[in-house]
Length: 325
Image (cartoon, rainbow, N blue to C red; front, side, top):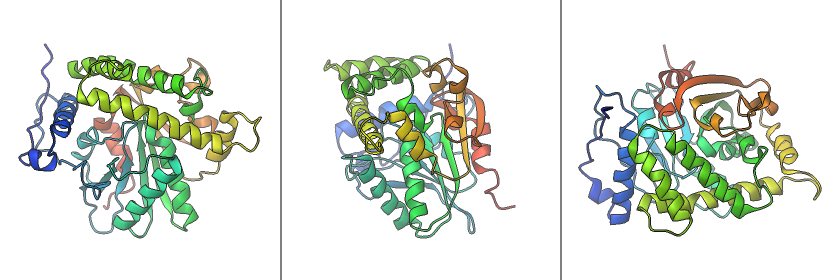
């Protein structure tokens, strides 16, 4: 039997998460992330971001030493950042994360990224900036880059972690039917859960699908089932707004817009991650990234969509060139 690591429950858990709903979600997710720890390593008390606190959009996991710029990584498609607890542990440079809170406007991708831009500026008024997008936040990351540049700020690093923004319009997706699109997104995530070795994630796959179809489920399953249709809708609405004519297809509109994002980009791909969900063609082996960014650096690593955040190659690559000697 595989021995799994564990995380001790924070001493202030009840104070930071004052409802049964929140506590259940935290404990579920701690169980998921803990299983990614090496068996001979026990995590210290994790930093517990307060989801009920509207000021906790930017979670400063690790402060940047004097003279360094923190890497700011956006949440995954569910809006949560618990998996990023693992990423910050071995980090030497500054590491911040962006999470969805009750204050986050989810009416449109523009409103969401405008809000994130404001919150980042409150924490780091001046550039340069280092940005990362984990999972389905890559499109949000691209618009943030354009917001910073439009305001005269320099973005010196962009990293996509096991996702590419043009995956939102890849072949085979029902782009003309938002309900079918959200359904496929849920099933895609469930497939990735089932590829994981952690028993709790295997169970969560079914819980999320049950919640999506209105069946009894866990609190975390309900949260995921509620969030992914929102993520799908605002992404497709935004891409549709990029069309220059009613006849233009979404793929063309998105690629034209993305081609104006002119920053150094590195994509990290987990061999058992989202690459298992894309078309099995040569142009999609890199998640289609070079269709838009021909000079993007692509790094393939072992692992799946979840433990990629603790991969040594990814951790080192994200910091390469940004640590003071």
